[in-house]
Image (cartoon, rainbow, N blue to C red):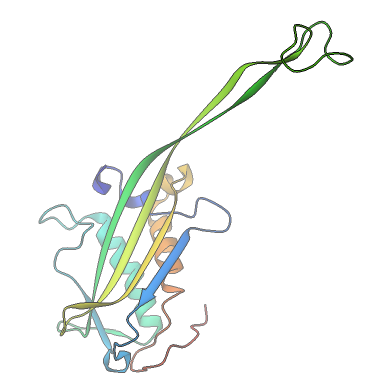
Length: 194
């Protein structure tokens, strides 16, 4: 399913459970983060629709700009870092089955499973359909054309997220950047206060 069909909006992610989305990050330990002071966005993000900039992409850019500027980075036309977004929605189905109790006339004393007087009869089955959204953010060294940081957030897309896609996107981006351990012009990772 293309993200543009359901404004990645909600899609993206994933604060479906109280603990938030499943966030994973990685960075290139060989990259010289001290030389990165400016940022910008790729010409055609993975969340765009062909040559059309999507509303989702615009919201992602706004959220990422807030996060980058909070860390001292400045937006520029010829940036040190380019930011790209990709995402997807996946329909999932969970099916559970378990033996269903059958209560006969003699259930209890002298009844044993499978007997005519009680035990297990048949199977109960439940089916749950839901959508999982995944957002991936890449920070790319523009000069070397190589990713130096990648973060992803994945979680169940809730009705609340579909009703308020801008907030869902802000939350997903904030969850990923909470694990981005760099500030402008510094080589060593730092703890970024939230």
